[in-house]
Length: 117
Image (cartoon, rainbow, N blue to C red; front, side, top):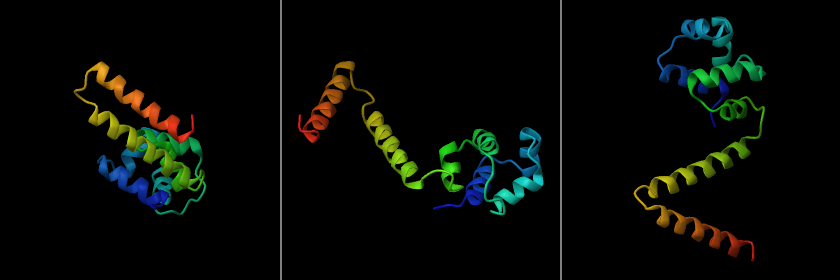
């Protein structure tokens, strides 16, 4: 799993910003940002991570997880569930409303079998 610093650095580079540009936008000092990216700061505030997640287009939960502020396994589980939901949505493209309702009814049927109903 990535560290907070590597996630921040990679995300910043992916959107093409320098540390100085991020400083201008956020008001977070260039030196502090550099320390974050080099994993020198272990407990950044949620406020700072929230600002960076917004600019870097990274989920706040991912940053909190990488900073060991929330449980990584829970984040991985949520990401897997989101990926599954996105996969279903992608495959449902082009289906009529009735066909989509059929898919939902089938999912409910499978879920009810699992719960023994």
